[in-house]
Length: 307
Ligand SMILES: NC(=O)c1ccc[n+]([C@@H]2O[C@H](COP(=O)([O-])OP(=O)(O)OC[C@H]3O[C@@H](n4cnc5c(N)ncnc54)[C@H](OP(=O)(O)O)[C@@H]3O)[C@@H](O)[C@H]2O)c1
Image (cartoon, rainbow, N blue to C red; front, side, top):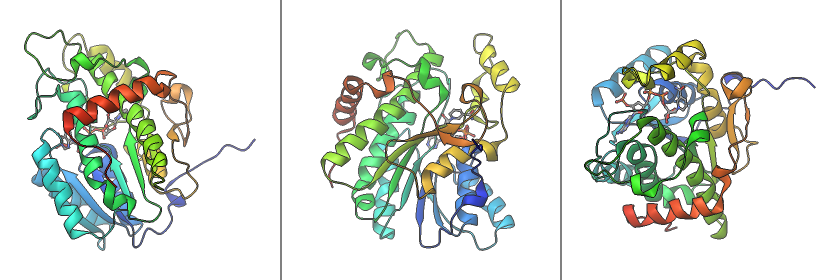
């Protein structure tokens, strides 16, 4: 059978589409923003640093002078910042076609978010949960809209441990497992949200994607002896950033995708290659774990589906 190749040449014209990208100034988010802008979409960059966002926007404008890009400040460590971000979008834009929940941190030192979560689950899951719930009405009122969550190969090693969600002094902390848990949460959220939206007859598609192992700024905290093996793996096996961004881009705009699909590279162990539908673990499909995460997410963020 002929191997399926999907590249930026497959991008349709995205004129009239409004796409929100979190963590849009670096790595996968930057490449996705550039690709969407190149295809004439209106892109809203959600970034925590105005300086880094402006620099990224400037680079895109140098290549595509007509790129239609808005920057709105977003700090996923802080619910009040997320609320300002979604309030501004809800007020300024009459529709949102795609929400790409991409921003992330990996293997960072133990610490709290503004709202008291452990940072990795706080930014990678709870922040995006809060954001998504606050944009859901807008997405639901937009024809053929979708939500894409960026997960990781690391979800395979993740276990859901609700007693680690909140930051606490003297808690035993393994930062690698905390990252894996947050990436498992991205998939549990994807599948759990899909089910709940379908129960409400919503047509929003919910998908996940992962970039395999891709050269980006994600590994900036990997300096200690204990995390050095992770650095070696990343340095040995990785793909260029534009290629790594393709699974997420495809999930966001390919008209043929189905809700609940998970996109990733087609190579060995999903590390690199062409973006195709890939498998996530049995644990990611566990209804019990999806329900547990959902209940904690609702009670800890005080947000739920309201469409
Ligand atoms: N690269 C890989 O091999 C790989 C593999 C699997 C999964 N992923 C996933 O891919 C996604 C993108 O990561 P990347 O590899 O592109 O890394 P990256 O280059 O470090 O980009 C991460 C982006 O997230 C933003 N971000 C971090 N904390 C934030 C916060 N509190 N509020 C708002 N934005 C925040 C960063 O902003 P600043 O620039 O301001 O820090 C940056 O724009 C992540 O979800 C990651 O888990 C990556």
